[in-house]
Amino acid sequence: MTARATQLGLTLIELLIAVALMAILSLLGWRGLDALMHTQEVTQKHTQYTAKVQTSLAQWRADLNAMQSIPSINDAGLAWNGRVLRLIRRSSAQTPDAREAGLWVVAWTLRTNASTGQGEWVRWQSQALSNTALLQQAWDMALQWGQSGQPDADHETVLIPLMQWQIYYLRGNAWSNPLSSTGNNSNLPDAVRLTLDLPAQHSLQGRLTLDWSRPNFSNTKS
Image 1 (cartoon, rainbow, N blue to C red):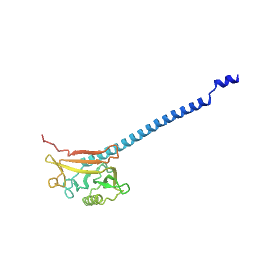
Image 2: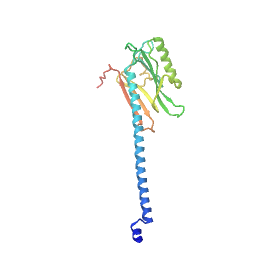
Image 3: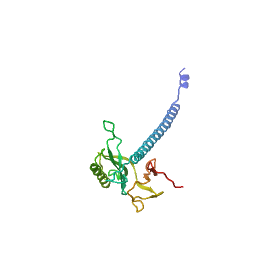
Image 4: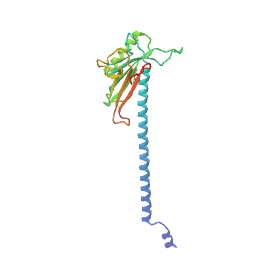
């Protein structure tokens, strides 16, 4: 009976083989789970970054759509000096009696992050103003903010990482640099082209181009 019971049980070698097989299966399962989690993390980062880019471009378009010309400050309603783009736009905020709160001065610039050394696209916005003198003051402050490269936590929003950006104006069915002799004009251009060079270390990379045209512009070029 003792010899028969011993033959029915597992030998030490068989037990070791079973344990080794379980260890291999566990390792394969962990690797599969780790790869799945990594893929999920990469997908989530890509989705979040893409959403930031889309939100930033939507804000850019909203600013241009709401542009307002103040002749005493700027005839075109926007100004580009090669580093900072400033514009005056209608505020989306409302007073308690459901009226527009006034006008915003908005500025966009590319700034180098002092901590990381990487470029970032930043937007600056004043409070809603209805006084011409205050608008002029905010207009000058926006330029100073963009030129200095210093953060302004009360008025700015850091948007997305960015390497380079450029602005072009459409006038007379031709795109030109606003700083050139042909593009330097006080009138509102027919369209504004924005080009962004996104850094390579992100999933969405390369050059991105967005065109905006003024609402009453009709391109008759054949």
